[in-house]
Length: 499
Ligand SMILES: Cc1ncc(COP(=O)(O)O)c(C=O)c1O
Image: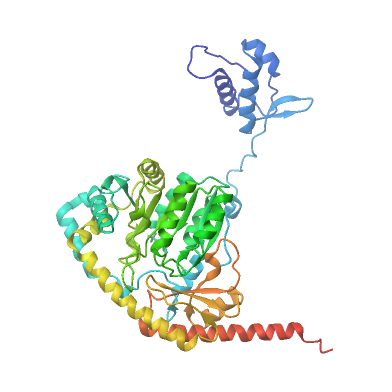
């Protein structure tokens, strides 16, 4: 074994030594089982400190290139057996390679798969129906983007977003009472990415994240992936219970509080103006950032919602995230975040590693829709349609569900949050609903901890009023089926053996 070191080089001595040994091992010059000199001897030979050799050996051990054996000193570790050439290629075992993840009882994509079957009424979908998607408007405006920008609509754009869209979004936020500049806006691939990026730059494994209880399951997935400790604070008709939040803040130092003040997903709750002020005051007092997810804010069906948290944020505690998914079309994947200055660069860097940028064409299209007023007109139409759909759901729940659920009328958003009079296993109810060709979102997905009682989230954004009526009737039959089958099972379990 030959090691040359250069004391004038900018690389530390231990790195030079480990690099030299590594190269010799990888080139096969030091064979499997080759015995390296003891640390003290090599230190003397090279005229370096013994800890220098210790550090070099430690690094190579961590890489699995060398190993220590009592009585045999340090030796080169054998390579993995050479795969035979020409032999049949065994199947790659992906399941052995995957990192472990937390997954809930129902996978969201399973619900989506079921939703593609024909004649199924989707009361689970949290996005606008095809009949509300402005296809012609989007087609016309896309052509206009190409006429205006040509190939410029298809090139890479800055990670932070196309500058004209950032300007338009700052103006939109200005209309909503938020004083911000284009530089404060980060365009994201949907609001989901904004939640993910904020979490990536702030939350370390074991950090506490506070959420409402119930909350948006997609955010729970993000916090789970970050290995956060998620604590739920219950909501009431006024939104997050700030009295309970205060206890949590006294006990823990959360990294962030995630909240949906307007027409919360899944409960539809609208946080009162007073609660919003209390929430900001608590965030400031306990020095905890607030992530305000405002994707449903434009879906007020009875008068405007109170000002957003960002509009009340005087000291830069609020990260505001929103999106065009819920009113325009989710497939465009255009969302945005209004971000306190010190955070924006870090978020942009995290976005760079995720997807470099949000699609240029979609950004330019949205900018045109905002500039021309077409977006505002479309929002108006969607709201009217949602009001009719919500009322249809309210009436049919009243007709079919009074004996098995309770709920309150949402004043906006897309959802009814129904509490089952008698909790029942989600899987059983999902299966009965599938037989009846209707879907719902199981409430269990919306809690960080297992909820007391059973809940269903029913969406009125996707199905038309007639379908909603039929869907609720089907669901009611499914609930009765599930009740009957659980009664049969319970009776079978409690009845005495016949022989
Ligand atoms: C509260 C909330 N936030 C964020 C999202 C993500 O939406 P997108 O990434 O399409 O903007 C959703 C979608 O259901 C949502 O309900």
